[in-house]
Image (cartoon, rainbow, N blue to C red; front, side):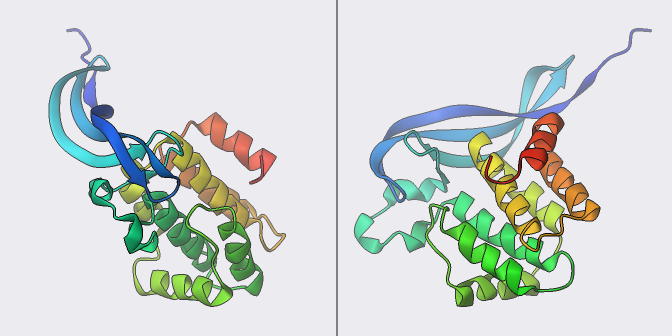
Length: 207
Protein backbone atom coordinates (compact mmCIF):
# COMPACT_ATOMS: atom_id res chain seq x y z
CA UNK A 1 0.00 0.00 0.00
CA UNK A 2 1.57 3.34 -1.03
CA UNK A 3 2.45 5.87 1.68
CA UNK A 4 0.33 9.01 1.22
CA UNK A 5 1.74 12.31 2.45
CA UNK A 6 -0.86 14.97 3.15
CA UNK A 7 -1.30 18.00 5.38
CA UNK A 8 -2.02 21.73 5.30
CA UNK A 9 -0.01 24.92 4.89
CA UNK A 10 -0.63 28.63 4.55
CA UNK A 11 -0.10 30.27 1.18
CA UNK A 12 0.14 34.04 0.75
CA UNK A 13 -1.34 35.63 -2.36
CA UNK A 14 -1.93 39.19 -3.57
CA UNK A 15 -5.62 40.03 -3.91
CA UNK A 16 -5.45 43.74 -4.74
CA UNK A 17 -3.03 46.63 -5.19
CA UNK A 18 -3.05 50.36 -5.73
CA UNK A 19 -2.07 53.65 -4.11
CA UNK A 20 -2.54 54.62 -0.47
CA UNK A 21 -1.13 56.85 2.26
CA UNK A 22 1.24 54.76 4.36
CA UNK A 23 1.23 55.89 8.03
CA UNK A 24 4.98 55.25 8.09
CA UNK A 25 6.35 56.68 4.84
CA UNK A 26 3.53 58.66 3.19
CA UNK A 27 2.11 58.24 -0.34
CA UNK A 28 3.06 54.83 -1.70
CA UNK A 29 1.87 51.73 -3.53
CA UNK A 30 0.34 48.82 -1.63
CA UNK A 31 -0.40 45.15 -2.15
CA UNK A 32 -3.27 43.57 -0.26
CA UNK A 33 -2.30 40.08 0.89
CA UNK A 34 -4.32 37.06 1.95
CA UNK A 35 -2.90 34.09 3.83
CA UNK A 36 -5.07 31.04 3.11
CA UNK A 37 -4.74 27.52 4.40
CA UNK A 38 -4.61 24.81 1.72
CA UNK A 39 -4.96 21.04 1.94
CA UNK A 40 -1.76 19.57 0.46
CA UNK A 41 -1.04 16.21 -1.08
CA UNK A 42 2.65 15.39 -1.48
CA UNK A 43 3.32 19.06 -0.53
CA UNK A 44 1.21 20.27 -3.49
CA UNK A 45 -1.59 22.69 -2.46
CA UNK A 46 -4.86 21.36 -3.84
CA UNK A 47 -7.92 22.45 -1.87
CA UNK A 48 -8.33 25.98 -0.46
CA UNK A 49 -9.59 26.00 3.12
CA UNK A 50 -10.02 28.89 5.57
CA UNK A 51 -8.43 32.33 5.40
CA UNK A 52 -5.81 32.82 8.13
CA UNK A 53 -5.11 36.53 7.73
CA UNK A 54 -5.61 39.53 5.47
CA UNK A 55 -3.28 42.53 5.53
CA UNK A 56 -1.98 45.44 3.47
CA UNK A 57 1.74 45.64 2.71
CA UNK A 58 3.44 48.91 1.76
CA UNK A 59 5.70 48.40 -1.25
CA UNK A 60 8.06 51.17 -0.08
CA UNK A 61 8.78 50.34 3.57
CA UNK A 62 7.35 46.77 3.69
CA UNK A 63 5.20 47.71 6.70
CA UNK A 64 2.10 45.57 7.24
CA UNK A 65 -1.25 47.00 8.31
CA UNK A 66 -4.89 46.10 8.85
CA UNK A 67 -6.96 46.58 5.66
CA UNK A 68 -8.62 49.61 7.29
CA UNK A 69 -5.39 51.51 6.65
CA UNK A 70 -6.63 52.08 3.10
CA UNK A 71 -9.03 54.60 4.67
CA UNK A 72 -6.18 56.27 6.55
CA UNK A 73 -6.56 60.02 7.00
CA UNK A 74 -3.07 61.55 7.41
CA UNK A 75 -4.61 64.44 9.34
CA UNK A 76 -5.92 62.07 12.01
CA UNK A 77 -2.37 61.28 13.16
CA UNK A 78 -0.17 58.22 12.85
CA UNK A 79 -0.77 56.87 16.34
CA UNK A 80 -4.20 55.48 15.42
CA UNK A 81 -2.68 53.33 12.70
CA UNK A 82 0.54 51.99 14.20
CA UNK A 83 1.58 49.11 12.03
CA UNK A 84 1.14 45.59 13.27
CA UNK A 85 4.91 45.31 13.41
CA UNK A 86 5.15 48.30 15.75
CA UNK A 87 2.43 46.91 17.99
CA UNK A 88 3.98 43.44 18.01
CA UNK A 89 7.48 44.83 18.74
CA UNK A 90 6.27 46.75 21.78
CA UNK A 91 4.26 43.83 23.14
CA UNK A 92 7.07 41.33 22.58
CA UNK A 93 9.58 43.62 24.30
CA UNK A 94 7.24 43.84 27.29
CA UNK A 95 6.74 40.08 27.39
CA UNK A 96 10.50 39.52 27.23
CA UNK A 97 10.93 41.85 30.23
CA UNK A 98 8.34 39.79 32.14
CA UNK A 99 9.76 36.42 31.07
CA UNK A 100 12.18 36.01 33.99
CA UNK A 101 9.72 37.24 36.60
CA UNK A 102 11.72 40.42 37.32
CA UNK A 103 11.43 43.89 35.81
CA UNK A 104 14.98 45.21 35.60
CA UNK A 105 15.84 48.85 34.95
CA UNK A 106 18.33 47.66 32.31
CA UNK A 107 15.51 45.94 30.41
CA UNK A 108 13.25 48.99 30.63
CA UNK A 109 16.16 51.07 29.37
CA UNK A 110 16.62 48.59 26.52
CA UNK A 111 12.97 49.02 25.53
CA UNK A 112 13.46 52.78 25.35
CA UNK A 113 16.70 52.44 23.38
CA UNK A 114 15.36 49.82 20.96
CA UNK A 115 12.22 51.85 20.28
CA UNK A 116 14.38 54.62 18.79
CA UNK A 117 14.99 52.41 15.76
CA UNK A 118 11.37 51.26 15.40
CA UNK A 119 9.09 52.99 12.89
CA UNK A 120 6.40 53.67 15.49
CA UNK A 121 8.51 56.24 17.31
CA UNK A 122 10.40 56.50 20.58
CA UNK A 123 9.11 55.23 23.91
CA UNK A 124 9.70 57.18 27.09
CA UNK A 125 10.59 55.23 30.23
CA UNK A 126 7.07 55.87 31.54
CA UNK A 127 5.52 54.54 28.32
CA UNK A 128 7.81 51.46 28.40
CA UNK A 129 6.71 50.64 31.94
CA UNK A 130 3.09 51.15 30.88
CA UNK A 131 3.58 48.64 28.04
CA UNK A 132 4.95 46.13 30.56
CA UNK A 133 1.98 46.74 32.87
CA UNK A 134 -0.48 46.17 30.01
CA UNK A 135 1.29 42.95 29.03
CA UNK A 136 1.26 41.79 32.67
CA UNK A 137 -2.51 42.20 32.85
CA UNK A 138 -3.02 39.86 29.91
CA UNK A 139 -1.43 36.55 29.01
CA UNK A 140 2.28 36.41 29.83
CA UNK A 141 2.90 33.52 27.44
CA UNK A 142 5.25 34.63 24.66
CA UNK A 143 4.98 31.71 22.21
CA UNK A 144 1.15 31.70 21.94
CA UNK A 145 1.27 35.46 21.35
CA UNK A 146 3.89 35.10 18.59
CA UNK A 147 1.90 32.31 16.91
CA UNK A 148 -1.21 34.50 17.06
CA UNK A 149 0.37 37.44 15.23
CA UNK A 150 2.87 35.75 12.88
CA UNK A 151 0.52 35.61 9.87
CA UNK A 152 0.13 39.40 10.07
CA UNK A 153 3.86 39.94 9.47
CA UNK A 154 5.95 39.60 6.35
CA UNK A 155 9.42 38.02 6.34
CA UNK A 156 11.28 41.26 7.07
CA UNK A 157 8.89 41.98 9.93
CA UNK A 158 9.55 38.57 11.47
CA UNK A 159 13.31 39.14 11.33
CA UNK A 160 12.96 42.55 12.96
CA UNK A 161 10.71 41.11 15.67
CA UNK A 162 13.28 38.44 16.55
CA UNK A 163 16.04 41.09 16.66
CA UNK A 164 13.91 43.12 19.08
CA UNK A 165 13.49 40.08 21.36
CA UNK A 166 17.22 39.34 21.14
CA UNK A 167 18.16 42.91 22.07
CA UNK A 168 15.97 42.80 25.20
CA UNK A 169 17.35 39.38 26.19
CA UNK A 170 20.93 40.70 26.01
CA UNK A 171 20.16 44.01 27.75
CA UNK A 172 21.33 42.93 31.20
CA UNK A 173 24.62 41.53 29.87
CA UNK A 174 23.72 37.97 30.89
CA UNK A 175 22.59 36.00 27.82
CA UNK A 176 21.52 32.82 29.62
CA UNK A 177 20.94 29.46 27.97
CA UNK A 178 17.24 29.70 28.92
CA UNK A 179 16.99 32.97 26.97
CA UNK A 180 18.71 31.43 23.95
CA UNK A 181 16.24 28.53 24.03
CA UNK A 182 13.32 30.96 24.28
CA UNK A 183 14.59 32.92 21.28
CA UNK A 184 14.93 29.71 19.27
CA UNK A 185 11.33 28.91 20.17
CA UNK A 186 10.25 32.41 19.13
CA UNK A 187 11.97 31.95 15.76
CA UNK A 188 10.29 28.59 15.31
CA UNK A 189 6.90 30.08 16.28
CA UNK A 190 7.43 32.79 13.65
CA UNK A 191 8.03 30.08 11.06
CA UNK A 192 11.65 31.13 10.48
CA UNK A 193 14.37 28.78 9.30
CA UNK A 194 16.32 27.30 12.23
CA UNK A 195 19.73 28.01 10.69
CA UNK A 196 18.76 31.64 10.12
CA UNK A 197 17.71 31.98 13.76
CA UNK A 198 20.97 30.44 15.03
CA UNK A 199 22.96 32.77 12.79
CA UNK A 200 21.09 35.79 14.19
CA UNK A 201 21.68 34.67 17.78
CA UNK A 202 25.38 34.30 17.06
CA UNK A 203 25.68 37.65 15.29
CA UNK A 204 23.65 39.68 17.79
CA UNK A 205 20.73 42.10 17.37
CA UNK A 206 22.64 44.70 15.33
CA UNK A 207 23.65 42.31 12.52
